[in-house]
Length: 64
Image (cartoon, rainbow, N blue to C red; front, side, top):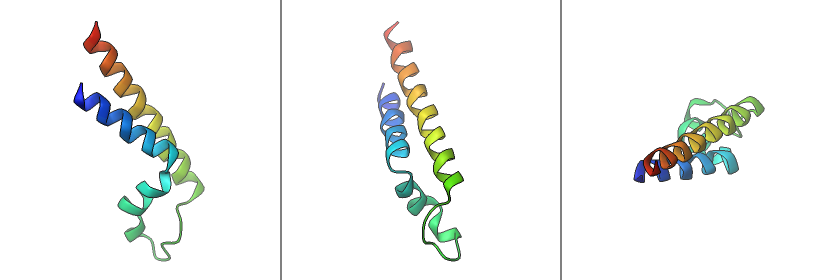
């Protein structure tokens, strides 16, 4: 249950603030390090949706 809640929270963060994830994980890899690309934002938001769905599925599975 705790892991499901963590997945949901991380997914919501990835959906709402992908730039925070970029600053933590990817900014040091960039030469100019100004902002994430559009494709990075889209893929991070998609990953956030998948994490949130996995967390919700985990909570549903535990309650069955």
